[in-house]
Image (tube, rainbow, N blue to C red; front, side, top):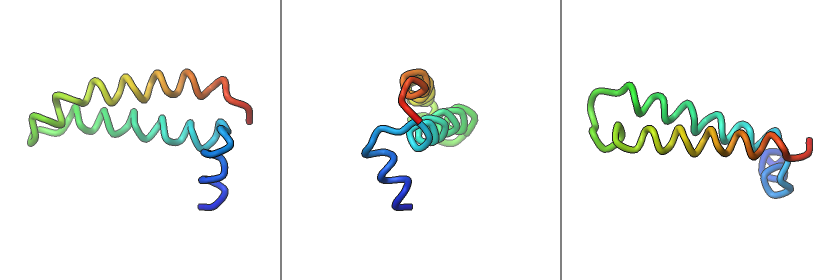
Length: 62
């Protein structure tokens, strides 16, 4: 856990890619759930943020 936080603070690729991947997965789950319209409404935005974040983070150093 400490390595994860240090990686985030030092702008390392691994931890930030994990955060971006979780955002993408969260957006897809929000898109497929049938219960809350608010979650469905923001699902595309969350997926888009995660995708753009993943593209940017892929340029960070190892």
